[in-house]
Image (cartoon, rainbow, N blue to C red; front, side):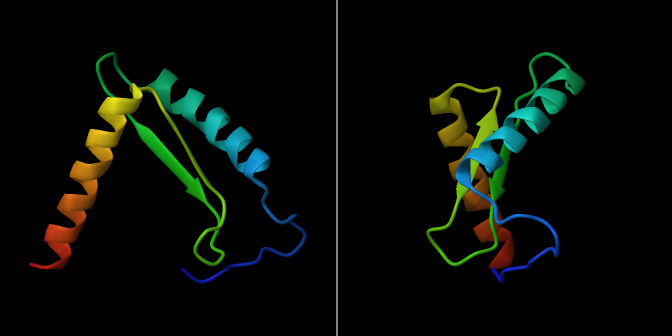
Length: 80
């Protein structure tokens, strides 16, 4: 990913990204019907190893399974 700078905006920190993810996640959770899960990944466009966080309304094990399934589907569709 290439780094995109927005003039006048501070460099992201993990704390800032976590706050944004939690705020957005509350809005998503409030907007979804019961029984629907979500995950929001928030990351910077810096080099590998940069800041990344996520928020979800699912338990950790279910979220890991959903992320694996998502990655598998993305890889399969890019190889088609």
